[in-house]
Amino acid sequence: MLDVWLYSIISVVLVSLLSLVGVFTLSLKDKHLKNSLLFLVSFSAGALFGDAFIHLIPEAFEFNLGVKLPIYILSGILIFFVLEKFIHWRHCHVVTSHDHPHPFAIMNLVGDGLHNFMDGLIIGGSYLINIPLGITTTIAVILHEIPQEIGDFGVLLHSGLSKSKALFYNFLSGFVAVFGAVLAITIGSRLGEFSSFLIPFTAGGFIYIAGSDLIPELHKEVKASRSFFQFVAFILGILIMLALILLE
Image (cartoon, rainbow, N blue to C red; front, side, top):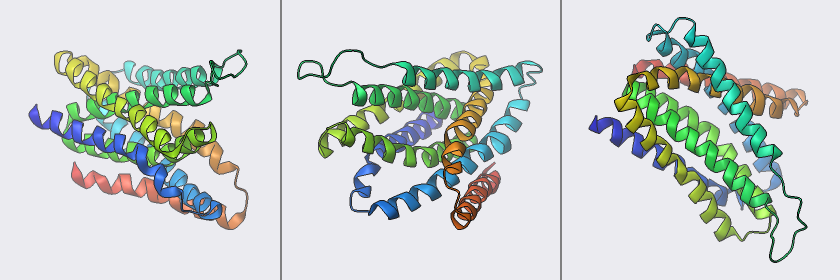
């Protein structure tokens, strides 16, 4: 059990540190940053789909859940849908002033914090099954978090925060993943059924993120050469997950 805690905490701390990746983009020109994000988003989409279909769903079959399996997968899709709706619905009707600053940055941090908490749950729950599954899931989360944290950093800067405050608040938001992992291991170690739910739930969440958030972003690029580049990166993401079968 000690190794589960150790691997989980190291993994979520790494995920939390990704919140600082935005500072490295400040020196990049917009064109180079866009091309980099194009690759990262494509690669991330492939990795999330790959982890869901190559690792998580086959692992979920081991629990012999029967009809519960597709229900748990669909619950992951639905919960992430509701979470994203909550983030987009919440807005303020009070005019921005010194005493009432615009909540744009605050809501971005709240939404990112909730997302990172879910990442922590996912990572902790995966390590409860076995270490290799935890590692592959962590890699999938990391690949998804890099472009997301770059975008979040840009949003915070756009909202008027200084670079130092944007990095600090983004890191606090990312650190929430630690609490998610602690909760998952605490509950999962006492309730074995929790892990049997969390694995297919995670697969559903990954399918939703890749299909609803990432793929639509890729469709915004219609130039043939860049679309081909997207496709190659997408396939590479899947192949990485396929290669990680060697860990199991």
